Image (cartoon, rainbow, N blue to C red):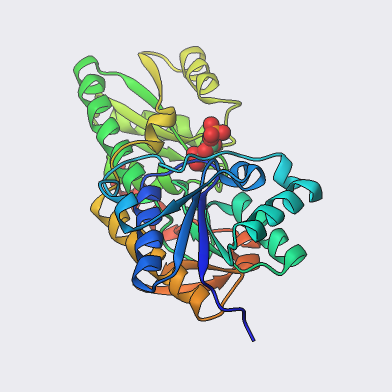
Length: 328
Ligand code: F6P
């Protein structure tokens, strides 16, 4: 028989993403709706180890659905990777009468949640929050859509100056292991080339493509580079390569960096976060544990945490083809 849940805790962990606050709000309000108590844990697993808890009610989460970042703050905890750290966290939860934990974060955060469950048989539920969209079991992670809009807005602005000066821009976007942001934002921003970690197109293909663009009458070019792309050592090396080997290009580099993780969540992310929070709370109340909630075929579905952690998201090959055709 699963244990009756009367009180749950929610935390945000790993890199923040827009929509985390909307998810916290949803978990807190769904708890209030079902008459169970809810505590917020500050600074992810660090706060769990230190017992940094705050009782939350429906009114504690007013005015945050539109805010970027996370009001609970986030951290990457080294201590939670140790057995002693997790024991402290468990002791604090027992002392505070907490029966279940909702973790909003990425795969590293879910790995911690799963180990914690296996050691202490403690109910856990994951909500995928990362701009990278690199988690199996959901077509969209929280923050991905907002980050895409931020990147597209930046590309549009860079295009203004690129075309005014007939320049070639290399624009680096986030995605240390995956190219979902690069591929989608690149298509939406009309990029001439998109370089992603999943596909090593090689320098020659890049050079050919840039030359073709120029011959076809284009005066400016934008190449979107995912930070995990493997062609060059880094984006500045790509610029050096073009400077040294291709005539007549005026090249600039723009690294968008952490601005991609900030900002007010899009409508899509707010709705997604609200749905995920409700699903997470209600699944725990139904006695489910060790799952991640996700969006699959427009529905809220559960995926075992183990599968979410181990799986690798695939790049959409159709998008790759579309991007090639669009840069003709
Ligand atoms: O949120 C994921 C991510 O955006 C990655 O794409 C990036 O490599 C990483 O975060 C950088 O995060 P931090 O600076 O917090 O280590």
